[in-house]
Length: 263
Ligand code: NAD
Image (cartoon, rainbow, N blue to C red; front, side):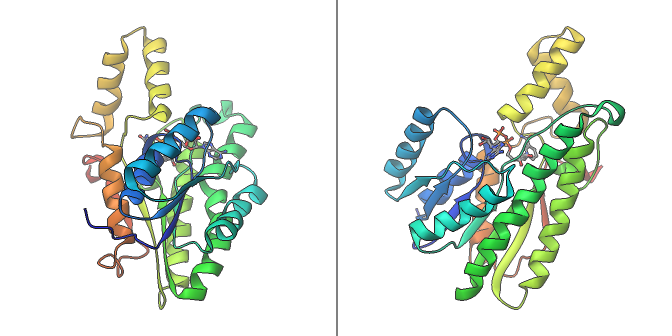
């Protein structure tokens, strides 16, 4: 396997689960020294970290910053630079969802979704860019969503945060356009992760239907392919965006959504 990220240091936020975990794994296999982050049972997180390091024969660290807090988001990158000497690749992936109509949307849930899905990417990028600019090389990948391009009911905070992060992506790209520093967003459709499992289980309970039926409904409603997007295919897209061949791709929002936003 080609090791395109040899000698690169990559931070993947929210990489204890789902899409972030697949990206951390793929980047490690591509030779990167990887910093993982996210919530989870400490023993399980350590097991994952060791498993990835062992399989990839690279260094893998874990820094447990809570990205709802600006100081911790900034500290995640400062600690990475202290530990690894630099940051070359930043994937802003951590995210949460809350589903409710606007009149019923709890204020604290709005604040949490915006803080984790959007503001944390500003705080990590702010510190990372200063370091990347010293070497004139860097890659920032913001994991947005099909909901960064189109809306759905009952997801006001999520849709606002994901539209916002595509805006942040464009500004980051433009401010660094003359450097070898790119910033792009990835816009997945439905991916089978704990974030979506919660929505499927809520739908099954509300309609008194099976989880299988609820899954079919949820994916079928929006995603013409009628299939989940896999975390591994998103990780391949992220890897391409870190490559030299991807060096002129900047400020874009890449859909991998089974046709969702083609409609
Ligand atoms: P997930 O729930 O499997 O993973 C989310 C990760 O974020 C976990 O590692 C979790 O610990 C971490 N996290 C949550 N809050 C955090 C906090 N305050 N501080 C640090 N880490 C925190 O979900 P996922 O589906 O893999 O989602 C990853 C990203 O992909 C999110 O930004 C999500 O919005 C986006 N996305 C997911 C889908 C989907 O269908 N699953 C679709 C489009 C976009």
